[in-house]
Length: 346
Image (cartoon, rainbow, N blue to C red; front, side, top):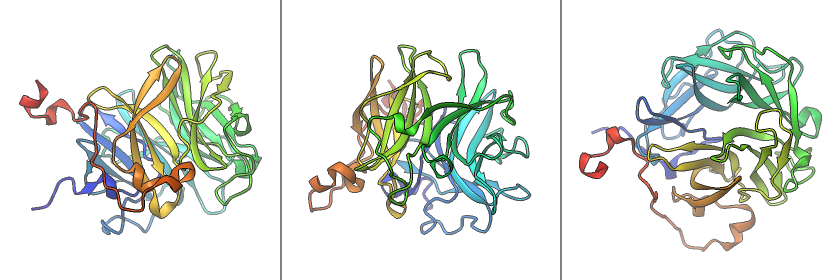
């Protein structure tokens, strides 16, 4: 009998895991160009595409299924860090894209379901002409207007920039000029001259916006320290997208894991997802239970059991030599009520 959810989180190899908790279906979704192709060789590989997997419990995941394929779409490269957002009753897949001989740009795809099929909202990207960009994410400002927050690449500007541009209501085009929110070198916890090949610039990666219970707007983002890839966050002093932004002095997580985002699971707990380590063949998804302490985020616990296996950076010399396989452990069940037996739901 074929299992509906044959992929355990411990075996999942994925970069930049963005989790959509879809209350309508009761499933969690995450997306990538390909997912564990050695386990699931039937995935489409000969053109640009995105696949998705889904889960009822954040631990056991489905086989990958196709949600977007290139067709006549302009880009065939750099299908990186897709995020799925709900906006005005539809689902938007936001990612970076590139065509050979051109810069990387960010753009929105749309569908009526988190399982697609997705299609481009417009033919043109929304990030500025002539800018080398990546890692677009969606933010709704205090007036209900949508923005794309994205990274202006250190490869082009040396000191990587975090930028934002206002979008049309359908997320298909920009409707204003880009704003530079802050520079990578402003983070006290970051490290100079560290790039993906060990040198080259100050990096901005993976923005994600979250409003704390206090009303404070924070942005998670990623940079490199002398110990490896890391997640930090900044606070907006105005409470909205244009800041000014002030950086937290210490990283939130610095064991060579980052490109982080926050979501609430179906049981109500605040969670953070990221990949660790930042080594492509070894990347795994870590999930953390989080706490809010006033205007500060705190990690309560890593719940997938993957931390010990993937740890790098400052903690890697503290690992035991024997293999450690820890069972996933949640404080509150992450399952949607529609999938929880009635005796457990009471």
